Image (cartoon, one colour):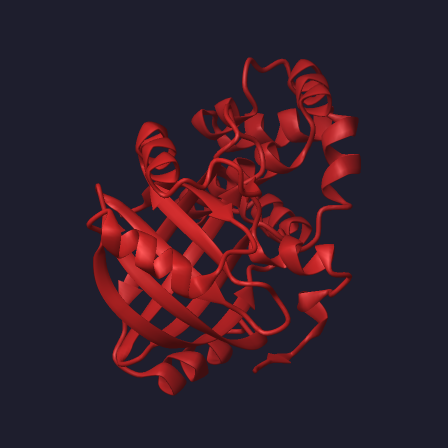
Length: 264
């Protein structure tokens, strides 16, 4: 089942001082973790689009239903990646109120609506790997989790919206081999140190990455709780952002996507 969270990062923190503050306000210390992470790219948006169109032309009802399910996932990503003006233009060309209305139609009508929008077809040709969605295999001490993580670019507030599907698996390297065997090849391997806390139904993490200054991350489904925690920690004057770690590296002119092994 998908889990939706909102999250923020507090940058350039002092690790020992922050841990002391968290303990002082009563946050539960869940310990320090040495994390090993494999990340994998989802197949490109344009490749998946071509596959969906091909399946929709099938006479096999099962394949058609599968393709519509795939289209629903694809449109969720596409809608978040493109600007609203382009999205409005696509909907006008397809004569839709919302682009996701496509998935409620029959296969022939879906194909006709897709082909009717020059804007949609021009834009989707340029959409390759979604930088905001990936698969993560992570080992935290003895716990191993496989996650699909989608960070939404568009948001109604300044706090990042994140959707995750996560399961626990038993073997780090064997799961890596399973993913490789079905064609999902890892992008890179990363290591970091994480200090974890729980407070007011929020997950609070202090992350230490190679080549980055330490930061604190607060994840919760309630924006007010995040604001309260920041106030209790007296962090209102700190630099608070809602961006992913990749963009933090880019601030230092480091393209982490080009580093196959990121270690201390």
